[in-house]
Length: 346
Image 1: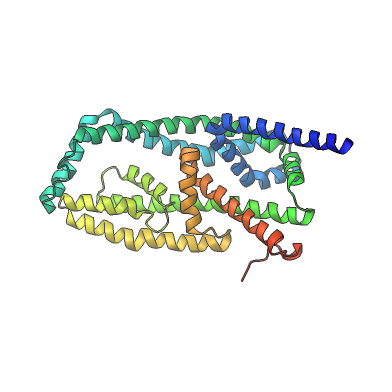
Image 2: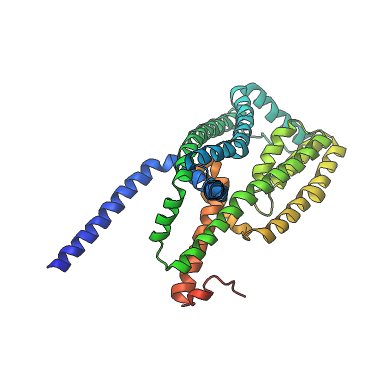
């Protein structure tokens, strides 16, 4: 009778935990980007937190405030400036529909003059403009959600920094492994977080800066805006930044600016693309090697879930999923010994 009652209590408790957890996850889903952002930045700052509190004897609250200020200066202010630049451009397109119609007609006229093909044949220009306006409004709503998530990120990050040691110990106790495997699992998790949270933005910033220099040299209109757009295009493997500079070069060619168009194409192929290859090679030697396919599908997963922040968190979650699947395979299917569990397959 006691065993039946014990099982009833156990399964009832599981149902309660699962039900409440599902409700909490559903209600917090709009803010999951802020929570994941706090966890990611915490992993990046935990080493500094340990140094300030354990080696220099700082109070945890004081150290947390200092590191919070560092996160604002190094991470959040640049992101906010980028978001502001994009919002200003999207607002211009959304509010000034007359200019947007004129731009569409000029592009179509250039294509017709150069190729004889009427791009707007049978197409209602107003419907195209309305579609672009809806996309702009959806983008602005996403940026507003991004701002709310930033506030949540700062709030959660402070308490994670203050209670980081207890939080990590509790998380380790929940992992279904012994102490040795748990240490290795945590190390791999930190490596994956560092690899995705550092390498993806770093590659984006470097390539965006290099592309911005090329846009200035070739006389591209709104070079800063297109440089920022190029930063986001870097997360798409294979084509990547070409999604930006190839259409720009094509538009310049339609305007009969052949020299600038050829120069931009050459710059994109010889400088921007090669810089991406070199930078990825250097980072792969210093950090966990994330396959481009993981980055691509991670972005596709992350953008619908997290919006603006999905560029980073999507690949991060997908890399974590692949790691745990691989760990399950080696431990429970291949029956690899714990001492060799994290050795690389050859």
